[in-house]
Image 1 (tube, rainbow over the protein chains, first blue to last red):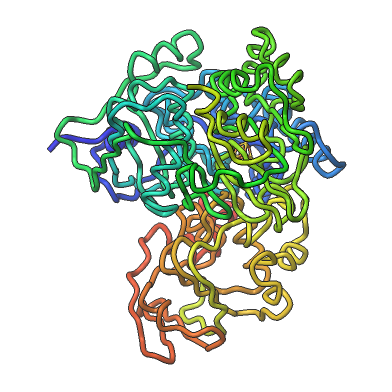
Image 2: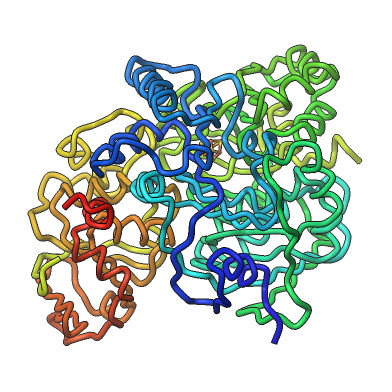
Length: 418
Length: 166
Ligand code: SF4
């Protein structure tokens, strides 16, 4: 019997053959935290050690509330800046870089076969680069800072074969929502999901990141793509460390294998208030909206901004509707700025914001009032997520959001694309 | 973690997510434990934080704690007095967070179906049993690593011990 990617990564890490379900102690290659590094540093202080064990394995990115909206967040940021200085942590990225899940790959930490843990549920995103990455809690991060290690269960693997040919006007986000709608928000709880099939290999890195990011919404511990030429091309000039390319054996053992044929998929929408409350777009057409959000770690990359701009070009955001645009990182922001996309957004009446999480977590920069309806490219639509608990959030692809802000109601993007 | 926990039940349904347990708008507000407790479950059950008593137990359906990795979704319940959580299933990160904060998280779909809101139940960790008004339900023992963490009272104490600080 062959081995899965997951078994190989963990076996290599602990220096002996492991089986699915086994509990092992590992030293992760990198441990990520963001604005929550401030409370984590306070937990760290409780351990009674002065110095973090491996400063260069720690990556900290300020992104959740940037620039600081109130004195509280400003003090947190200040504390983090002082902490990285006293601890000699070299991998620190201040407020001008972007969202952690975009910045960490861009800076060359998300590499094949690395184990990366982070105090954020969407740490799964680095699976798009063939890394094993999972979200953990703050105390766990503090504990890794102190000891360099953590207990983990080697998860069983579900193989998702995405096959067929994706129709025009339908995107990775629609595939992700479709899968979540089918398997449910707990469909892959505790499991690692291996995304394969012809559609998965044809996906760009940016599109793969959408699936790996949203693996968290399937309950998965990790959601990865086996590395291929696209992965190697992405990381070749930026890799921060050497890495090995590991893949699953043909005869590896999977707990479950599911096939998703996406040849006749239409744009998908997650309705309030759970991500698995998914419908094809024609069931929600005409739902009035107040705000559109294009961005976040799910869909704030150049390919997302480009498709939204293509639809918005020469058109206007409907009066009475707000549309906020957040590039996922400064790097993507600069690309969009240089190729004229921001001009299109600005002329259409969108508000272009700084790279960062924005109102995705309801903390600042465009939160919702009671009774308001938003359509967002983010990954979560829970009650209260973007501000008021009496607001309603629909999730969709960047194309669907762009088409919807033009008409002021949920609109099929294919009418602007085909 | 005591060998036996006895407490009154607050029962909820499936998919209780981290945003209703502890709203995102408070996550970067550096609240005190008492303030955190006062916001626990406020978007799901405004009565909870007003009436919860020390030792009470939460019983819930599938995928309890789905969503964000925020630990306050555990700490707010812990400071509200919750001594254990029984659910049909937990989200992965929530389960880890609960263990790491020293709160036993037990999966038992049968017990959840049997338990009524407001009743008093008993959890016996040595025997791996939940005693309810409708009978006794078994649950599998915790793996050794988790027991060590629970017995230390959470990952902070466990790590201190390991670093030789206690
Ligand atoms: S953009 Fe939203 S989902 Fe992504 S890291 Fe930021 S808050 Fe989390």
